[in-house]
Image (cartoon, rainbow, N blue to C red; front, side, top):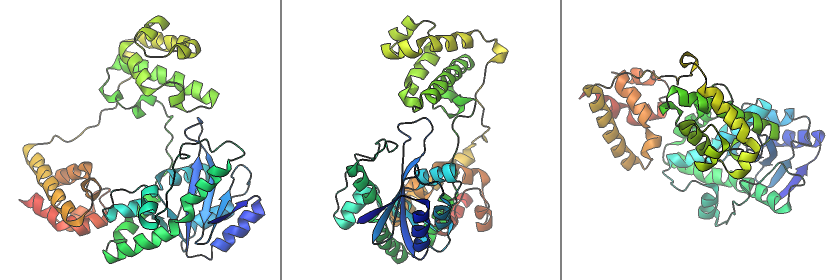
Length: 374
């Protein structure tokens, strides 16, 4: 596909005004989340059925025309695996994407197991795509030519892929289901993961005692400050496994940290003293000052509820097999538990359950009520 670099605000406005006349466009983003503390959109790819446009957000100052295009209700915006893109657009531009079509989500309704873009392009167009630049540093300038060609490839076939998948959804009577899911996906928003206490977002923290939590929190804050100062991703400062080891073992000297292999010699030279200070400070806290992990009150699962959950899971497996939709997407375990606890008696009761989709009620509503009524 031929492509054009958009190098000025006026040019972007002209292109976006022209794209508003299209019925469908493809959109993709490249970011630097693997390379910077404060991630940002580094390249925007937009494509019609015949041409791609590459927008460098570092050069463009006025993006209102692009925002207007994304928020337009008439033009279909095709993304593949849009969750990261939608959150990034919200973070950087506070934009709401309307009339979203996500080819990855759509594939779930068709029972397609290999849903990566490379696999779909190979299957549908016999096109081989090398994803080696997926984790490249897109914030560097100038952008290498082979990276430019890669970025164009991400949008070159999306509108054609939409046409194929859209037709299959129509043929299977599942288009309205997918549209409901697209509308929900379009409403996701960026979440700041750096809100204290930091341990609330740390995997495994819920099983730790209070003293270990205090150590972990101090270490997480040390890592956050270093990452922000160096403008590096958290994992490139210290791995989660290293912090978990120190929180559990609580070494109070650099030698001890090295002995248990919590950090490398290089990390010890750079951050060892800060880690020691963080651990010592946590160890000196009075018991009443120690943090505690928020407890989630879950209703007790009595025998009747457990039996309902078991019946719902068996029903899900049966429907999954007949429909060719993966069980976890059809109805996840958390939703099954909610349904069992709520014990709805009617379709209206089902529809009132938080996060239960209309398409799920349409496809399994009667089966769900039957399982609960046994």
